[in-house]
Length: 210
Image (cartoon, rainbow, N blue to C red; front, side, top):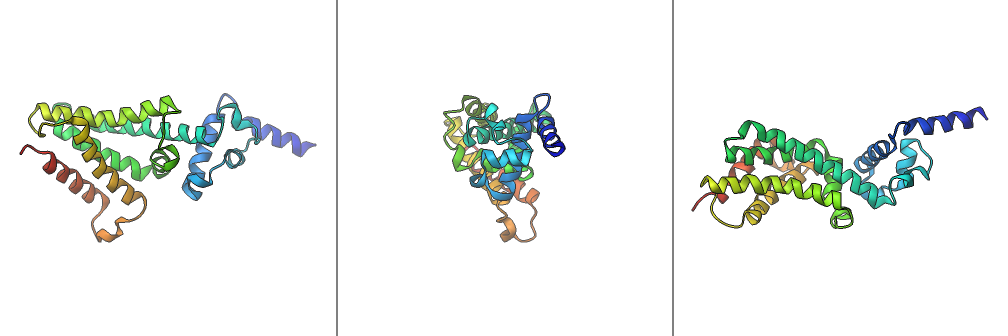
C-alpha cells in the first residue's frame, strides 16, 4: 500500500501547479532526440514524465497535438532568437537580415529535437493548429520584413519579397538541416560558424542589385 501511495504522490508532483504540459513537452523532446518523432506516443511521454497513461489527455488530444505544442514552442523560441540577433543592426537592414539567418542556424543546431519536429513531416500541415501556424508565419515574416527593408535601401534587387526571402530561407534551412543531421563532415576542417557566414554572404551576392 505504501508503494502505491508513493507512486501516486510522485505522479501528482510532476504536474502540481500546472506543470503537466511542460513535463509532457520535455518528455516528448527527449523521446524525439533519442528515438525520433515517429517513435513518440502519448503513452511513452506519460511514462517518461512519470504520470498515468490517461494524464496527457487532459491537455493533448493525441500525439499530433503534443507534437504541435513542441513545434510551436520551437518556432516562438527561434523567433525570439532572431529578434535578439537583429537588435544591434536596427539601422542596417542587410546586417539585420544576415544576423537573422545566422541565428536561425544557431537555433537549429542547439535545439535539434525542436527543429526536427518543427520541420518534420508530421507537422507539415499546420492548418489544424492555428497558433502553431501563426508562430511559424511570424518566423518567416521576420525574414520578409528584413528583406523588404533591404530592397528599400537599394541593397537587394526588386521583386516579390516573399519569393526572395524563400530563396534565402531555403539556403539557410538547407545548411541547418545538414548540420543537424551530421552531414557537414564532408567539409573537412571548416567549422559550422565559418560555413554559416559563407552561406549567408553568398545569399546576398545572389539577391544583390543587377
